[in-house]
Amino acid sequence: AGLVIEGIRKAAGHLRKDLKRSTMAIVGATGDIGSICTQVFCDEVMKLSLVARRQAQVQNLVRSLKGRAKINICRSVKEAVGDADIILTATSSITTLIEAEDVAAGAVICDVAIPHNVATNILEARKDIFAFEGGLAKVPRPIKVDSERWWGELSSDGRTVYGCLAETMLLALEERWENFSIGRGRIKKEAVTEIMDMGRKHGFELADFQYRGEVVNLGLGENGNPSPSAAQVTAAVA
Image 1 (cartoon, helix red, strand yellow):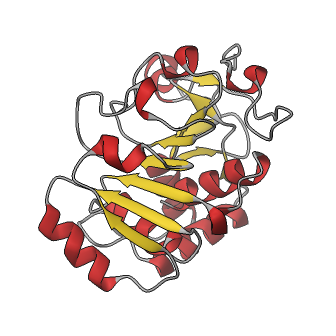
Image 2: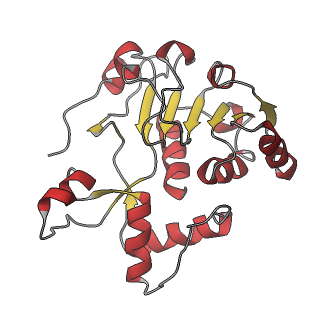
C-alpha cells in the first residue's frame, strides 16, 4: 500500500496535478489496499469517489473517515471514474472494469489489480492519459537465483518486484518472523509508515513506472497533460 501511495503522489507531482484540487476515484474502496488509500487520500484530495461491490461496507468506511475531501459513494465504476483526475483500481475482479472511453481527459491511472481492471488498449486508445502498475518496488541491486526461470517470471530486470515480495524480503532482513500485513484490516497507516521506513533503510525504492510489464515514461505536453511520448509504452527493461 505504501508503494501505491508513493507512486500516485509521484505521478501526480510530475504531471502537475495538484492533489488538493483533484478528484480521485478508488475502485475497490473497501479492500485492504483500497481502504487504507481511502484513509490516506481523504486528507489530501478535494473529492473522493468510492465504489465497491457492497454499498453497506462503503458507507461504514465513509463514516470512519476523517479528512478534508468531499466523499461521493458511487453505484458503478463508470460513474466513479468519469470525472476523476486520478484513478486507483484495486479489486479482485477478473474482468475489465474500466474502458478507454470511461476515463476523463488527462487522467492518471494506478492499476493495482491482478489481473488488470483496465482495458488492454488503454494506452493505445488514449494518448492523453498516464497509466501505471501500482505496488512495485526496486531492490538495491540485481538479484541472481539458482533457477532463473521462475525468477524471470517475477522480475523482468532482476530488480523490480511486487510489493508483497519486497515486504517479505524486508522482514527477513530485519529478522522479524511475523505476518506483517496478512489478514483483513491489518494494513494501518502506522504499518505503512513502518514498512516504507524499513525499505529506505535497506535501499529499497519505488520502481520505475511500468504498465503490463513495460516501462512508461513520464513527460508533459504544453497543456500540462501527459504528452503523446509520455503515454506511449517504450521498450521493456532488459
